[in-house]
Image 1: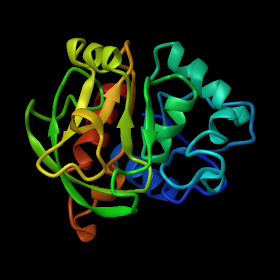
Image 2 (image 1 turned 180 degrees about the vertical axis):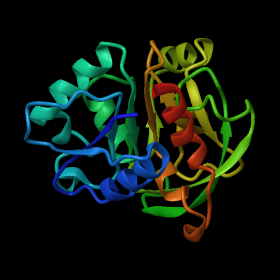
Image 3 (image 1 turned 45 degrees about the horizontal axis):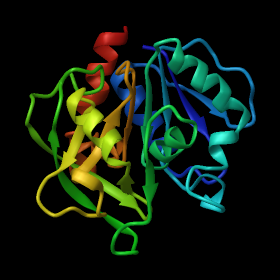
Length: 221
């Protein structure tokens, strides 16, 4: 599997994503600078977590207008996989690849801790390695992770089986319907607030994220 990680000024999880992808695929991903206008031919793009452009203005808003994002959007619209993690999820909503928005956490504080998640669908490249309703533990680290959409959008996500992950138990950020990750209509784009790349090494306290990267590698190789 050939992959690329988009790097913005302020990204702080780009290297974590690169290590997880490299370990799963056996080859290092391309690290693509936000100001580039060309994207190498790859199977998967990861828009990583962090605080792109310092999240000045609005989380993900400035990154969503970076030159490379035109190529990311084209890649997605051609049916190829894109994974947005944390700030990457915010960026994907800003570009219109995913519906809704990520607001300030309900408690108005930064949250950073492992959280239990339910696998709501296995009908995607990203979640195919898990069992439906399986509960996994993945870390979160965000200030603006409160997923919001209007009722029509939320109902459509439910009806079309596009809610990929939900928080189990306590809702750490106030997201509507406990949503932690969603898919686009064609199921090749996933945005999620938790960090699977931070749960891909037992030395870091958990390995539940490995399954996602392993499944992607198996299906895209």
